[in-house]
Image 1 (cartoon, helix red, strand yellow):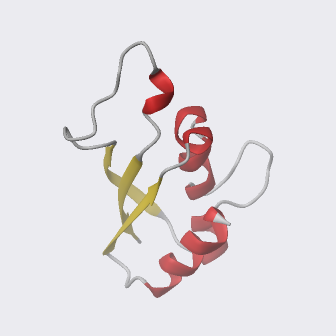
Image 2: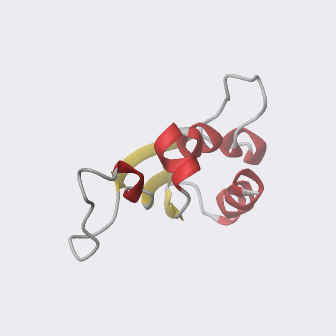
Length: 89
C-alpha cells in the first residue's frame, strides 16, 4: 500500500518538485522498510515506488516526531513516526 500510494504521488509531482511522505507504523519505520519501499530497488528485487513511477528521488530530510511527542528511552518502540522529504527527479 505504501509503495503504490507513494508511486502515484511521485507520478503527480513535477520533476524537481518536493514530496513529503509520512508513516506512523513502527514496523515500517524501525525496520527501515519504509525507506526501502520508496527507493528505486528493494533487496527482494521488487520495484520500489520511485522505480514504479519511472522517477529518481533524492532524500532531503528525514525526521521523526516533534518535541511535543517525547520518546521514553526505555521504550524505543515509541519512535514510530517517520517523516521523509524527497526531491522527485
